[in-house]
Image 1 (tube, rainbow, N blue to C red):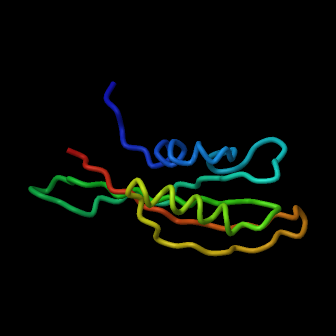
Image 2: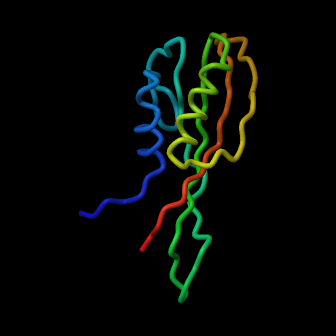
Length: 116
């Protein structure tokens, strides 16, 4: 079977050295003090030639949940992604969740893949 492009796989590989637990869609089990949740957002065929897509752009949201100050982790994540050619399309503080005591910070990313 041939290798397929996967922004989820690539994000997990890049962010594994942070030591943060990473899950897709929702965090299952008891949440640790800090963790990441990746949510796929879009798969786009933007560039065509001869009616065939030659590039695919995949987008995902990385949600950082932490009970600590999120700034250092946010910068670590963004720097790691930019270093390997991810495009950061948005960064925003979502808010503080009183019921869980987590700060939620979202980083939206995109990556272009050649399809041919």
